[in-house]
Amino acid sequence: MQPEVKRLSYSEIDKTFQNRKDIISETYASKIDVFQDIIELSFHLARVLNARFNEEYEATGKKMTGAEALIPILFERNNHYLIAVHELGLIGLSNPSYLNLRAIFEGITQIYLLHLTDKEADLFYKDQLERLNASEKKELRRDYNWLSQAKVRDILYSGTKKDDLKKLYSVLSNSTHPSVKGAMGDFTLKHNVVIDILDVSLILSVANLIAINESYFEKINEEEMDDIGEALDKVAKELNNEMREMIPNNPAVIEKLKIKF
Image (cartoon, rainbow, N blue to C red):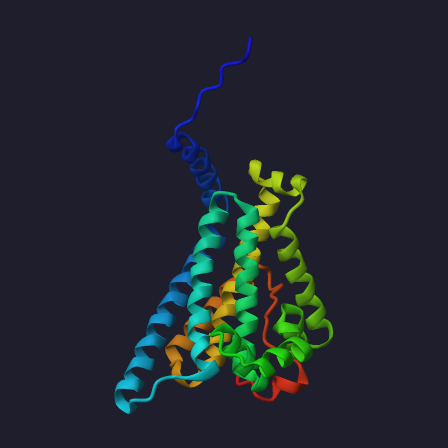
């Protein structure tokens, strides 16, 4: 005789994940509060910058063009990925959380690429908007390896910092394409994985703020800079001062930086 198995309703399935959410929210309340505060600040800064861009356009009639115009889009996209990480992480779905964290990591490096380079930024911009001519496509493939994440790291970073960020990116990438055994980690609530997701989320969320502050240093006022500094301090406290920032350090681009650690 075959065993009888009841078909669960969606609300019953959802309740399982809501139970996880209750446990995670209570256990890691401090980290979650800091992360939510950074998300609020990130969305606020996106709205503030958009308002200032519109004000500038109304006053001058000049639209933001070229590579620079992609930076606010990447910042806002990162904010959406942060929301996704938060919601998925709270219900203990680690693999899709890592997928969004990898996308945020890539978005941050792309913001710096657009801000700190000329030729590479122009190629990236044209590629994203499908405006490359045949010669530029050949150059992007031959000389820049389609601006893969590895190539972007080579352009922006050097030394141990590049090695450290490569390791972090590898961890995020491997977690987005897990083995069957690795994927089974999502079947149950694992606190060590939850902690890792929360910690990396904090690191990348504040790195996202620093990248947009660097890109639009002149447009962000003192109070907003103080808010970013306060967010950085909160994250440093949560991580016992074991911070990992993503400000480029390659001598080829470092002279263009406004913010330096």
